[in-house]
Length: 283
Image 1 (cartoon, rainbow, N blue to C red):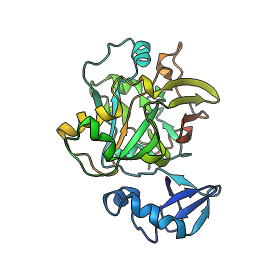
Image 2 (cartoon, one colour; image 1 turned 60 degrees about the vertical axis):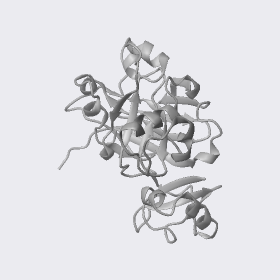
Image 3 (cartoon, helix red, strand yellow; image 1 turned 180 degrees about the vertical axis):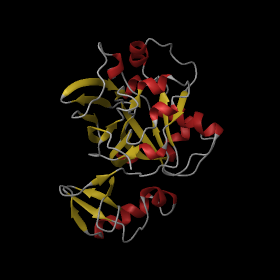
């Protein structure tokens, strides 16, 4: 299944993509996708979809599948070619940072360049996954059991703010700097998440072209590592790292500017596309 969150006059609804329509399951399953995962689960979504009202996919405004993830965690330096382009040493252990959940936006929503504070805004196309059930101390050989599904992440980064702190969190958490989507593809639809092609374009220019087979730490090892320390919850979004080709590594650096469009495609999932604008004045 491809599960979407989309805008309606009543607020966000959850639905299942069925060819060129969305089956709106919100009447049968009220609440956001994270609440559905924590409650009745994906089996209930599958059961409700066939008889749910149909909405045209083409006319729908898709939102972030998980609007406010309980946790938004991202791993750094997890592709060797990206490590090489940054000039850093490869990690001996997994290197994690938080993206604050307020950074999340969906497909088509604008990425802001906060020019009054920084213009060093960069893209990072990444494979992400969503935790489907509450769990702790999950071994790698059973880690797939706790994955609800897969989505695309753009780990937008404000590089000068990122470099100011070894934790990375301030440079990774600006509002609008967490595009995810375009939908959640349930785990049964992805035969091998470690054999997917990932590509990122800016204005039609191919910037990143990698495969998830190049991950240093695979998804199951990530779950084992994280759940050793703390509980993972339904709706947590985990991003798995970016391959080479980021704007900071180009000569000169190719920062995102207003008018740009970033498009990320991953095999079996689809495409996540977002325009870039100057940050509007705040009230």
